Image (tube, rainbow, N blue to C red; front, top):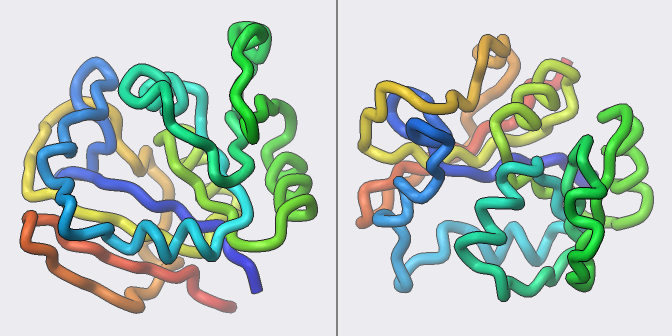
Length: 179
């Protein structure tokens, strides 16, 4: 069964982005010696879904990034990107349940959700996230954009794996509890 999987780094106090939406705060934990399960996730995924702000961050930091997988950017402002031509990149809007169902029907494999916080929070509230792959950084940001904005996920997920990395990150792999 293919899953909808969120994969991302958060601070000890639950922030995905620092003050002002700055998302580069966790880059110091990246290592060329470790892929943090990235290749396994990409090779088992059929597509990527992300929010507009996450896409804009990626566009600023790695504009030459190849879209190996079909990548869907959820945005209410698709015309903002009208002149942008990147293979495998699609801008999409509409009812989130329908968006997820459409993407999954078109692309066999896991649906990799790459952020942002509002998208992940909405997917959680709708019960559409099957697995969380959270990388906890040993930083306290105290402000910024929280990943969980009041979602009630505590009783809905079970820890299936944890792993510590030399860089300081701790991975928690959580699977949605089956009813």
